[in-house]
Length: 236
Image (tube, rainbow, N blue to C red):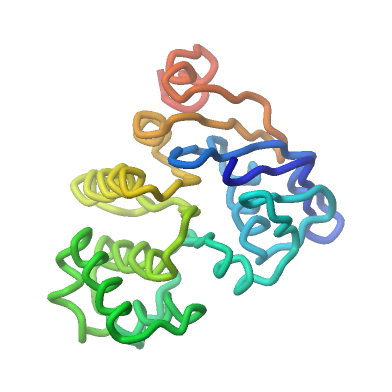
């Protein structure tokens, strides 16, 4: 098992946001987290990546306890978090943003060049924008850069938080295809996505979170046929 959460709880001050979360991601899987805004999905990703502390419980990554480790430790272990809202460095160039994604590894130039090529293979537009300031690109290009920056750390597991948010349908289609392609390269994905129908279509399994607790889990295709899921999240 690649990632396992055991009874994870977390709070913002006195407000308990996550309540005894048990979940897992197997090697080579795409797993999505489904739930309304404020359910705790983004917080769970932040706790995994060390941005928000866990109040109780533990995370195991490839058998190693990573609970409340510093973010750079977690990145070195093989997890990369692409946050909601992209959070690129707008005043830096595309090249500089990508280099920052690999900072924990201190790679030689030849290895860096291979990483750049792998990102350009997924997102050719970034190669033509290499010396452009990131803040001057379109929203879709910035999302591609955010994912590319995450991939520069050579992750085994990629945490993606709302990658399609605010993007045009054609760009969303491109992003979702890239996510599927990443799985074929051996990278596992834990996905938070507002487009629940699209997320379930490309995922292997899903967890439904309500008010900080997992209320349903199962194979993505089966959840798509669940009447309650259809009514609550698919508009059917």
